[in-house]
Image (cartoon, rainbow, N blue to C red):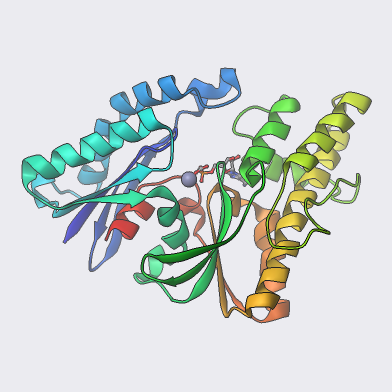
Length: 312
Ligand code: KG4
Ligand code: ZN
């Protein structure tokens, strides 16, 4: 069976075709970064209007990439939430209309479940039980994944999401939006120990995360010292900030794996693309002896392949 996946929860219009036997055949994403860049964040009304224009094109693109037509599709899966309500409505209505007209099943998919299962897309099936960390622009949450649809929230952020911290710090430094990828690239050229920033919730009991104190500390640093005027100073600042985000996440994960003695941990969401986080979590997995499964890079940020897979 071929399943059409549709994702429009934020500012990416995406469509994918999943073959129940062969896996993902196509996954087309149309981003809107240039539309929202001048505003330093996603403008919901502009996002939904862009989806109306772009979604039919990415659906056509996903179908023609695998030389099939709408009549070949056996089911439709679309994100129903959480996300921007106007953006969600576009993809959800579009997907429901196709399913209704073609008399094929429609499956509404939770966007977070899409991220959570995305590390397994290329395996065809999900391994249970495991712990699943989602680190994205809107969420930083850790789940105990016990079985299909059986998820228990173990920890989440008390304030900002990890990706939000990357985006806000980048915006303060005039580095554009979204900022995570730029920070990642430039931090590779800087010294992570140049400036010490606080690690959120480090001494607190429990497993929750926090990033707003770190964000404020970076903003205070910029107010006191100005925006770095050399490439080196900027790269050092970014590397130091990124190190604090990564340490906060990895230190909490270390406590969680000790407490739950888990054989497998997964990581998904846009921030899972971060090279330093991937490297440090991989070392932790090696030291502690658990299996680490990170979403393939192409399935970290928002995409319809993960929606088709979770829907299936
Ligand atoms: O999963 P996603 O596409 O959207 C949400 O569901 O939120 O994640 C987008 C977030 C943004 O905050 C972006 O800055 C961040 O992921 N991001 C990164 C990297 N690539 C994307 N953060 C750190 N390092 C990266 N390489
Ligand atoms: Zn997402």
